[in-house]
Image (tube, rainbow, N blue to C red; front, top):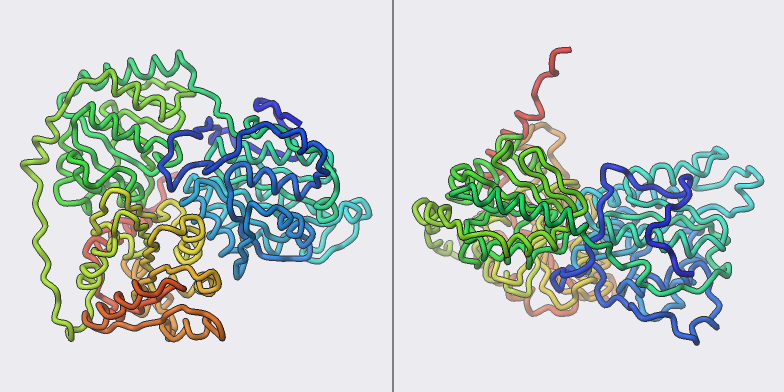
Length: 611
């Protein structure tokens, strides 16, 4: 069956929130972030039509056709037949997770590396746990396809009470919940409708760069259905509206022509737009300074001569705030402003001096241009602009070179600054740094990234513990990259089990676990006894995960010499992860975290507005 890409689906089974109705952007993404890596676009061969497809094998075929090499799963009785059906497709591996929350975050990490991901869980007790991670994928603009098993269709008709439910006859609550955190949510209760609904959900996830939800009744996974039609009906992108695009480019060029000292500010939605190369093209043409927001670190090359660092209010890179605040025109490219990224609403460009270019719209000075893809808009604008390099002249006046850092004495007590100094050489062009919510954010900002290196944080959702399963999923999706994870001890305790899955798949992830006996980010926002955690033998935990056949390494560093030795062992271990437990003082955190925490706490503590 070939699906009309503009066809609406029945309202009781599908969902697309109006505020997030964005157009697709499939092309031109960087290699580790291609939205559909290796997608198969050929028509279905004549021999394919003779194959008997089931609902499960149809889903498997489509997941392979959009380029997935893996899908993540936690088994449950409502999904067992579906998992069997997915295993019949040899183009993709089934990767198992310790629990459904970790499964969702593993898929989210995979989507960061590979462009799209899928996870399979059981009904209710599995899916509701995975919904936390699905909410994160929605907030972070990542196309994660969550597939859930569901009760037998006969039980729905017979009004039976079933396990893994709320103990009522209503089995629709999970679908209704899914509608709030996805761009498309479908429930398959008839095999004949499966192809259309599966295609719809996948198409919307790829177009919107948001998660989608597919619910399949357990007795339908092996039921026959139609064969898939050409995958182009699912992945083809609707082009920008030519008139809107031309008008937006003209207006933006006029805007920039009227400015003497513009600056470009790169935000995290640039990845969702697949327009990183195009942003470089505009920067080269305009010649102005380029700053990135914290959540967009690595989305613009840090070795580019116009890069001036991180813009993050008063905790910006040295000189970056001065340049951005001094400019008379800020071109916000894929920017996302929230209380975290604006440091408690203290650093938010606004007004007539701001041009906003989002993945599918352009806004400036009271004018709105819709259905304009960022990957089309940026190069078209680059061809229209004139050089405006005043902010580069200003940057030359205010920039400061960092002082060279001397190595600490090998037997000196380990401090955070020495830890980061030793991590820096590990960040090569082939490395991805995954920084957990907390002081790891601010430590990670101090790492200079060579071209090709990637940096991942979860600043919009901000789920503590995200990084462990995300690092696992990322490593599965990008096996040729060096994965470096910066994780605090409090966060690690939430999702530690997925280190066992790294061991299972022999993934050489390097984890720097900062053991400072608590959740330091919460301490700096608002301290209390609830920020303390029970200490673990983190290095010793790896022995538990290894059991009889694992090759993971658990090491402990209390000084610089021990840390240097541990890093050498980590680089030599190619058969599993290495966790380096770094013992540092509780109060040894960045000054940036202290400043940021104070301002965020101030924003949180504002009194209610008068009624």
